[in-house]
Image 1 (cartoon, one colour):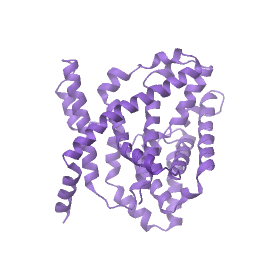
Image 2 (cartoon, helix red, strand yellow):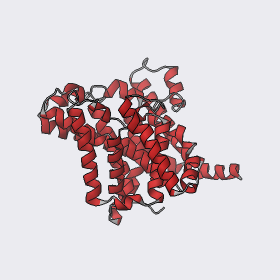
Image 3 (spheres, helix red, strand yellow):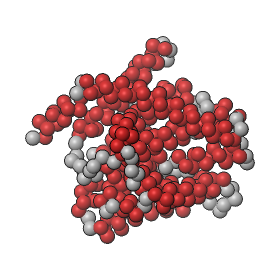
Image 4 (cartoon, helix red, strand yellow):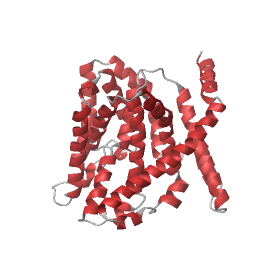
Length: 347
């Protein structure tokens, strides 16, 4: 598949939205705003708009990755990147605050997937080895059968759990390999049948706004509605899923100028590392927890702008640092060496 700079831009936007969620949630802003108020509405508006970020990121995996040759090299490179940051941040904590880091922290750093240092990475690895099977299903099943299968999965994983308030298939509100596998398959389906060609521009933007508005309205009216309005603020929510598909349609159809496209594609690989750096358990628990709560004391518009500004700052710093990591990996020629090793093993 030809490089789509719009998709690369969506990777960056999605990770920015993830940081917005973290500033609002773990950063303490949402807990510090009171309802009813304009500040409360604006902050939850940002939350509702950003909640589709993780679904977008997973959809991209299927939309871009499906149809390509299955390679273990990508998983190994991802593991090396994760271990690079878990070891680096753990060691930095040991130097800065001796006595706060012990052998258990290093064990977790060396085995980040098994110790679930990052839920998304652990879930992704769980789904990764099923991707060839998922791709085979997308490629081999007739369109009607595949459409029916995805419709059934959507009902079972999003609609019915919301109606009954249960989680019968242990999807874990989307924090699971099962949910990422479903999104991968959905992204691959959207690519194969070019369904996003019908969801571009104003239509896609309007769809995103509509789904976000419904999510926000249900949250703000929680307690008045005959159901749990806050339940729509979930990765498995039908409105959040719809918003993520609309964003994928919007960005996949963007026409990006060549110069800007090259810059975006150069920066895009740093997106995941933004998550790996700021969501590392040591940074997450000892630095970010409640750090941004004072923003809730600002007037409503300034509070919203400050949240977005802090998110921009986190993304910028983490991305700049990751460019150095990317340079190191290239100097070591890790991708080429691992690819060559895989070729010899798979012969």
